Image (cartoon, rainbow, N blue to C red):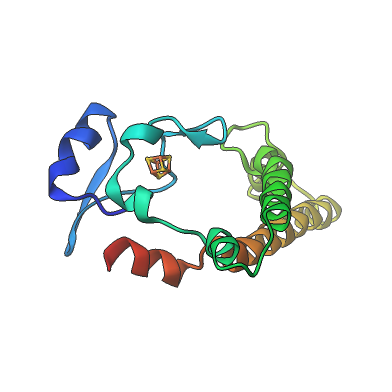
Length: 150
Ligand code: SF4
């Protein structure tokens, strides 16, 4: 997310990790200010955040999607996040990291490795499906790059 020159104080005040790019300052995502499913600094959010219109919002504003359909999409995505997040959480007891640790353990036998591979496949399938939905309904990486730097 690109920051305007005058927004450097906002970044400092909220301890955001600012990276310098060829086109100016930017904040790396995921944004740490997104807390409990919403923006914790909504009224003072940066200009780029105010300008952003996801694909679902644009479809609703353009009349090709009803409010109910738009909310249903958000509901579907939130449910998917709730399903996936615990399995990839970066703490040692999540299924994904537990499986990764066992895979790299030389004493793990072939049968156990096959079981662990099945866990990876399930998690990766969930992630791939989620990415597809997010690309279609929210924004593709190209959309985000264009929005962030146009
Ligand atoms: S809207 Fe808020 S939570 Fe989202 S990227 Fe901007 S500052 Fe972060």
